[in-house]
Length: 114
Length: 115
Image 1 (cartoon, rainbow over the protein chains, first blue to last red):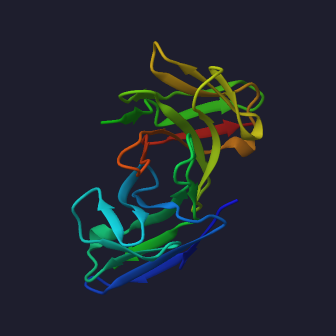
Image 2: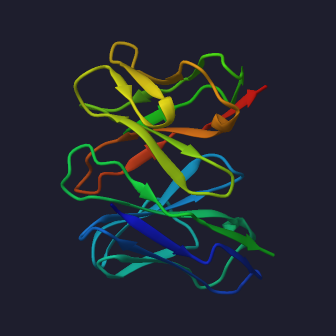
């Protein structure tokens, strides 16, 4: 089964500083990968998803970017953080080509921008 | 476009009583529907899914969900609630979009089970 590693678990960063959150997947190859953000402990907003190396789709315009340098590695970045970037960031994966596949989630990164 | 609605922000239930967490969906074509649970400061855990077949789907921890096509609903149920079931529950729908298989989530329902 798939295992998703996210780090760090918590992060406090000043406004204007850069960001790099990393997610790696074990137990499957060529997965679909996703970054979600959860604000105020409630709804999940899809930020980016990727169907392969170097292939990134952005769901909403924002201060963030994503990259997939390797098949099972997904990175969320920002050049300059804003206060509004605070939230709980979740990486997820699903199996490509499997009908009805569910997504598996990492444990999340709590980002606080101060 | 696909969407999911969870009309209740919070559901309170006494331990031992049955619980229902509501979800309605909107999607073109056949829906793939999912329920997830989230404990504080943790990732989402998969509970169950409906793809096709029986309208009553059984999942983890004694949860089940009933798919109702005419009402476009997929309510989560459990015959007897436990205090440990207290958590945030998300309904999700999936469509196939250019190979992305995006999952769209509802806003979540906080379940509180009291003694």
